[in-house]
Amino acid sequence: MKNLKFWLAALCLTVVFTAEAQEKKKFKVHTVGFYNLENLFDTINDTSKFDERSPIMEMKTKQFEVYQKKVKNMARVISEIGKDFTNNSPVILGVSEVENREVLEDVVNDPALIHQDYGIVHYNSPDVRSIDVALLYQKKFFTPLSTSSHELKIYDDNTKERKYTRDQLLVSGKLDGEMIHVIVNHWPSRSGGEARSRPKRVAAAKLTKRILDSLQSLDPYAKVFIMGDLNDDPTNASVTEVLQAQSDKDKVGFKGLYNPYSNMFKKEGLGTTAYRDAWSLFDQIMVTKPLIEKDYSSFTLYKAGIFNKNYLVNKKGRYKGYPKRSFADGGFTDGFSDHFPVYTLLIKEIKE
Image 1 (spheres, rainbow, N blue to C red):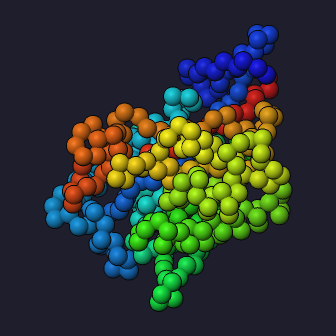
Image 2 (cartoon, rainbow, N blue to C red; image 1 turned 60 degrees about the vertical axis):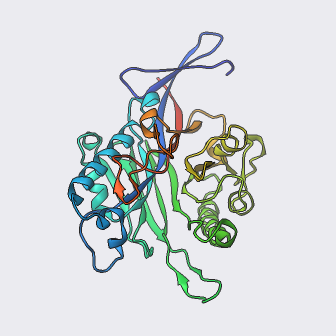
């Protein structure tokens, strides 16, 4: 179909495309996204963790008040990701920088989200900062069939001691009856410098690749989403060499990966987080080849984007133009996150 025109259905989760011949076809559309929630910790001191190092726990007063506002801010953003296109919040959302399942329960039970009836997939990981990844999903659209947590083992170059970091989460299930797989990541940070820390993210990418290979060995046509805060850009070796993600759909081979964020970064200069006046696009969603086929009888990637609404951006000060983060200079800013969320839109033709 050529010269497709896209508009929103006002009250239902459908998108209508009109071709030159005026033939009308209806498409179901869903949002699948990822969001780094920036230090979503509760106010309870867990003696088994180092959660006292979190920004909320370090505050001397109004901890619970700040926590409540932080939860409300996160729920507001999640409720609006992709809504302009679907009149709905994401049916599937990977998240990172959460302390435990309980903080996510508070988010999904906020008035902005409670009517969506989100389920949660979460495992406690051994991360030294006590932060995990997780998956939120709308129960009426997605049914998890299997979940697993995959440990990333990395070691200090000098001491050879293990550096504890986030596990990677795999969730497989049915989206409106169609099998998909989601791998949620939060790769090691650039602490100590990009070059020095690079091997840790390469190791993380290799773990992600092993998970992907295991899925594709069972089903070469598996529809897989790889998402997360990678702490690497789409142009870094972890993405281009280890995962071998392509920026051009036509170059994606059998069992290959397509990264729609690559050209956003290389050609448009877009980013999801900023540091020292430079933008990085650490938050990405990649998909396997079956999700970019021009076959609308099953779910297909329509577009990808960065959710960077005006209210998520700092309006003044030395961080003007940056994402409006929650915590800065030892206090709560009433902001959101130091990362913008990312999202993809999936479409599927509705046969009448």
